[in-house]
Amino acid sequence: MTTMTETSARFREFKMPDVGEGLTEAEILKWFVQPGDTVTDGQVVCEVETAKAAVELPIPFDGVVHELRFPEGTTVDVGQVIIAIDVAPGSGDAPAPAAAPAQEPVESADSGEGDGDAPKGRTPVLVGYGVAESSTKRRPRKGTTAAPEAAAVAAAVQAELNGHAAPAASPAPASAPVADAPAGGRPLAKPPVRKLAKDLGIDLATVVPTGRDGVITREDVHAAAAPAATTPVAAPAPSQAAPEAPAAAVASASARETRIPVKGVRKAIAQAMVGSAFTAPHVTEFVTVDVTRTMKLVAELKEDKDMAGVRVNPLLIIAKALLVAIKRNPEVNAAWDEANQEIVQKHYVNLGIAAATPRGLIVPNIKDAHDKTLPQLAAALGELVATARDGKTSPAAMAGGTVTITNVGVFGVDTGTPILNPGESAILAVGAIKLQPWVHKGKVKPRQVTTLALSFDHRLVDGELGSKVLADVAAILEQPKRLITWA
Image (cartoon, rainbow, N blue to C red; front, side, top):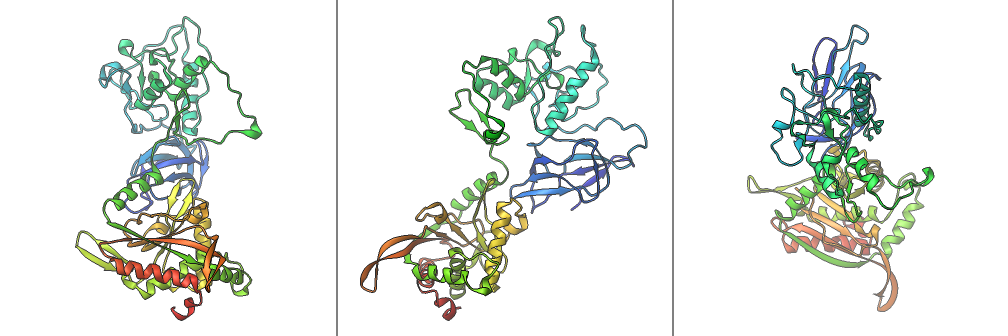
């Protein structure tokens, strides 16, 4: 859905769209344009992360970027304006950027009663967010000119929009105040900034603010903490730069803790797992199986010309085995409808594959996996994994799953007790495949062995049904020819 408004015949605004199914917010990960850049209809201007995936947003008209309303790393509600475009550049002087709503109010450092701290007629907001127009005029500062102040504010705004720290201001003459102090002399700062100062042992009253209207920023606190460091730390060489920490991670002064805000995909995962674990009564069953013949089949398929161009691995055979087991026990492929108190039988299988990505665990699914041949299933698996690793999985690709496979064996783990993906009836965990002593044809021999774990919703899957599904998967992996006789 296109979300834009017209502020005049010349300027148009683009709002944060709902890129998923009923999402309420998204975090701006990266801006690909800056004020003054020319854009065309369909050009991607930013990347945002929702509770489901990272998505690139294209602009729906031509023009020149007039204003970015929010800096990178900001979580924005759906429907808020994020960018303004001049669709008729050169037709006259551009008006001042429109006011954008602040995400968090600025509060005084010592209490929540900050109304008396700000000059009357306007409310201090964060750098880069803009402020409401006011009839109140500020008293000119003594011993300084307006130009350097404007340049410093402009640099701070641009740095905030770019997601970088504002450059340190040049030391002001001793007779010239750096910024107007708020009424009562109490410093202004956002709650996270005040907490950062507390963690670092910094008195906000001693910090020189560089933010608009005397607001103290994170960079100001870090700058105040830097001189207090007693042990110098050498910066890494350009070729040996340390890995970049998450944008909002905050380390304590002793570096014994790091706090990372939970948002985006990881926040959605946490909420979903809690909801699933405490809503659906989980039962997990285990079976250890000799998969030596399956591993031989994988080796043979890799040499088969019909499988050329697709990736063949044990997960492919395990996925096919689960699909055959579901075909033999269709009642397991269902969902619980709490509102109507019904069990909803699914006559299709959207097979979910849990994938670990830098942004957290996601579960895209292969639509109508039950209808796919082995080569088609292999191609779909390869595409799903590649898309997930690139961070390009769409919300639609993660919707509508019915049953999931999670392969914990890739981490060397023997097995686990997986939690159901919300709305699904079962999830199969596959452990590491290892060479172990095994009784085969009456003799102890080294065989390829793995352990499977099946968790299911006991409201709609009883112990007998769950056991049949797990036993069928194990039997197929032990004797892969059953893929032909049972399919």
